[in-house]
Structure formats: structure tokens, C-alpha cells
Amino acid sequence: MPEDTAPELVKSVPRLRKALDDVRRHGKTIGFVPTMGALHEGHLSLVRAAKAECDFTVVSIYVNPTQFGPQEDFTRYPRTLEADMAALATVQTGLVFAPGNEEMYRPGHDTWVQVGAVAEVLEGACRPGHFRGVATVVLKLLNMVGPDMAYFGHKDYQQALLIRRMVEDLNVPAAIRVCPTMREADGLAMSSRNRYLSPDARRRAVSLSRSLDLAARLVRDGQASAETIAARMREVLTEEGRAQIEYVALVDPDTLQPVQEIRAPTLAAIAARIDETRLIDNTILRPY
Ligand code: AMP
Image 1 (cartoon, rainbow, N blue to C red):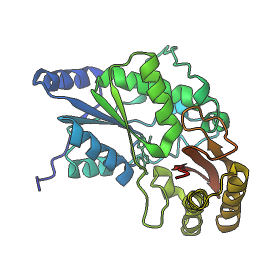
Image 2: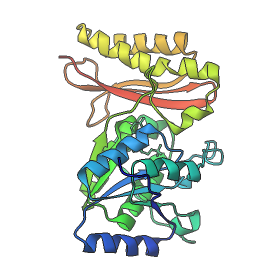
Image 3: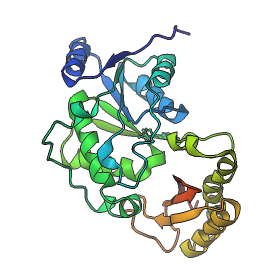
């Protein structure tokens, strides 16, 4: 095992470009993992995927204000740079880019990515403006880093889908990779927001993955009615999780439009609140 070495920490765009120009000059490929920090194994799995494919790995840590609604958790979102640097040292990350707000959004910033139809439903419907903020910051970061490959988690399926679309539509020269959702031993999808959960809420939060597991089992056993499956999922969420459901959706994985019958791979997606904490999770249901 190589020794843990702290990655280089860079806060300004000119310093970032200079460091990465040097990497490129040595003929190395660059893998990029954008994050909001408060890192967990899910984030680290993306870094490992980047390291497996690319010569040099860049992780960004930036809690992007423009993707949070006014009533959302921007101010209380966990910021744990020191612990994040230590975690990234264990996976030998090359460079960490952690800009301040003044570096990301210069005074007078007034250009935004207008996202299309896949951003209107599910998270887009619940969180107005969220994906405009996500797409804009991800495009800025891709332009700053200029990676060969960028890595995203299946956990945020809709986000990954619309970033793929953006990169195709706007000819961004980076390949997009989507990596599996990392879970706790009981199935709860890892998330920086899990640390908001009280011990009781943490126990009930497993109802999200349990309802997805139930959906997968029903489909495997031949159930094809989306309505029936969604009703059973809702039961698990409300009865076992005492969750407030924002949506339980069974949709086409490419268009995110609802399906009635599960005859092809279908995305099952959930957003629900356990007490005050809003959690999301998803899986692909396969009827064969
Ligand atoms: P975030 O810091 O929440 O913005 O997430 C940064 C990246 O990590 C996104 O591409 C997420 O989809 C991904 N990610 C978050 N949680 C997980 C997880 N449990 N497993 C895999 N990837 C994840």
C-alpha cells in the first residue's frame, strides 16, 4: 500500500489551470469528481473509479449556493474540509479544488445554463431552479478543470442524466461516467445529509431502500402494474418509515416520463422526508 499523501489544495482558478497544464504537458489524462464535500464512501468510490481510468484525479469541493432554494439547507450543509482532505489522502487524490463563492461567481455573474425537459420532472418539479444551478456550476467546473472523464453517482440519477445531455448538447469534450450507489450495511444510500438524521430517523430512513427492494422483488415475481408497485412502495415508506413522501415515481430511464407497465428497464425513484431530512434514492427495475 502506498503511503497516504495529502492532495494539493487549490482555491483559485489560475492556480488550478497552471497545475493542470503541467499534468497535461506530461501527457497525463485527467479524471474529475465534482462534490459538495462532507465526503463519504460514495464519493470515494467515484475517486477510485477515476483513478482506475485516469492518470491524475481532481476532486472539487464546493457547496454551490445557486442550486439551493431559499428554504433549503444551504447554510447548514456540512462543511468538513479538513476531514475531507484526510479522506482524499487515503485514496491518493492528485488535487483538490475548493474555491470560495467569490472565485466561482464573480460580481455580476449573469449567465445560466437553461436545462431541458428531463430537468422539469421529479427533483426539478420539487426544487425549482435546482438543476439550473447544478448545470451551470458543473459546466463552469468542467470548463475550469478540462477533464478527460468526469464521474457522477447513480444516486443522483436525474442529475447525471441531465449532465450527460448538457455535455452532448453543448459539445463539452469530456466523457461522463455514472457509478453505482454506495450503501450502508442496511441498504440506506450514503449521503452527506444522512448526518442530519437522529438515531430514530436513521432507523426509519432505511424504508427508502426497502421500498426499492420491494419494487424490484415484485417486478421479478411478474408484477407489471406501475400503480400497484408504487402503492406498495408508499406503504413501506409511510408505515415503516413514517416518511412524508414527495414522490414515488416509475419512469422511463431516458425521458423520465411515467410508465404504466413495467415491460422494459424502468427507473424507480423516491424523494421523501424523514422528519426534517429530505432524502432521495432510486434503482432500475428489470422485468427479466
Ligand atoms: P454531492 O457531494 O452530494 O454533490 O455528490 C457528489 C457526487 O457524489 C455526485 O455525483 C453524487 O451522485 C455522488 N454520490 C453521492 N452519494 C453517492 C453514493 N451513495 N454512491 C455513489 N455516488 C454518490
